[in-house]
Amino acid sequence: MQLESWILLHENTLRLTCFLSIFFLIAIFEWIKPRRIQSAYRPNRWFINLALASISTLAIRLIVPMGLIAIALEIKQQNLGLFNLISLPYWLSILLAIAVLDFSIYWQHRLFHKVPILWRIHKVHHSDRSYDVSTGFRFHPLEIILSIFIKIFIISLFGIPAIAIIIFEVLLNALAMFNHGNINIPRSIDTQLRRFIVTPDMHRVHHSEISREHNSNFAFNISFWDRLFNSYTAQPSRGHQKIDIGLKEYPSEKRTKNLLFLLKMPFFNNKDSKY
Image (cartoon, rainbow, N blue to C red):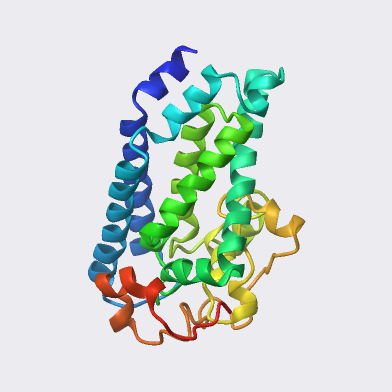
């Protein structure tokens, strides 16, 4: 319990430290041994993607100032939610809570692909014509806001322990950067890793221009969900070196590297298809 208290007390420092450490670690591996040769405009893309992440963080602070941890602690104090009503070993409740959160993120992701109005928001993420560690936090602020309210609902319904939320958020951010990384992992190692977690080669398929490919491999952390719910595609049809990343409706990198354009993208009155 002392460890839990320390983690809760230093939540922000812990999350920021993990974020920066993983980001620079993946970036170094991308430089040393990249999976694909990509656009030379990395600084501009990274600035745009980091700007989107910063705007999203600020928006969440303004809209939900108390944060998810405070909500979880209040739910626990009120003795609400499934995990607060049943008796389980503490370690098991943490593991199950993390699995529940990951399961909800998987179906949230599928929902954002299926529902047209949600796809208009989520396609900001898919509009990136390159694929690297910064793509892992390239999301429209509206998607992050909707996601936080979905998490609040799940936390309230299940009574997710606060420590499980911190662990999950750290894992989600770390694995999102990892599986968007342009890093060259040997096929033999990738095959074993993707039995448990989402790898860069597995998730890269999800960013293909081909509709049946970008409508598969929705998982962020645990790869099992895609196999369980028949949304798994092992490899891109054109191979990882020839795969076209992005959306066909945005063939040029010029617009998709413009911050204002990306912020306005969900509101364009065009006939974009969700597929």
